[in-house]
Amino acid sequence: MALPMQADANQVAAYWTRLAYESIIRFTRDEQAKRGFTQPQFWILRHLSPRDLAPVDGAAVTIPQLQQAMAEYIRPDDDLASEAEVLLSHGWIHADHDGHLRITDAGEAACLRMKQFAPEIRSQIHRGIDDEDYVAALRVLHTLIANTTRAPETDAAKLA
Image (cartoon, rainbow, N blue to C red):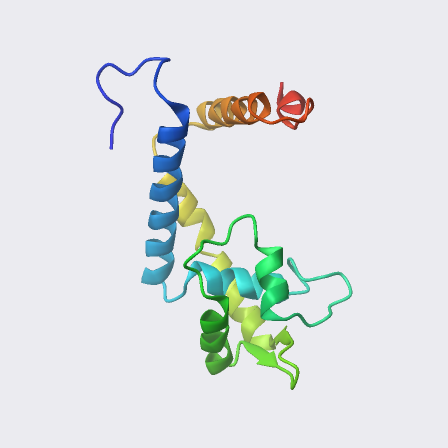
């Protein structure tokens, strides 16, 4: 979807950021599905991997703990329990008798394979956008967030 011909500074940012968010998420998930995995499966493996996002102590975690760790970006229709079942069936994770999950060596290898697709997917999303314009857009978004957040100081000031 292109900007309307009369695009100007009066366009509603919330409308366009929502459309961008939905489009990017849909595209990313479609690309991951073409490669044989889902975004939630990737996130689960990353959160269980001591080489990535797992707790420093390497403790096994439960589905509710994973949901809490992913609260900022998990989507309402993401079913981590079902996604974990798929990972269990592949032998990529192991569940103990209390339902605590750990990644297996095969899961670590799968996670690394999944990560290899990220640059290609990012490249497709960023096609036609140079890094300078991308960073400028991020600065604008950070400023919009700062201007609409009650806290007087946010990360937007750090980007200035």
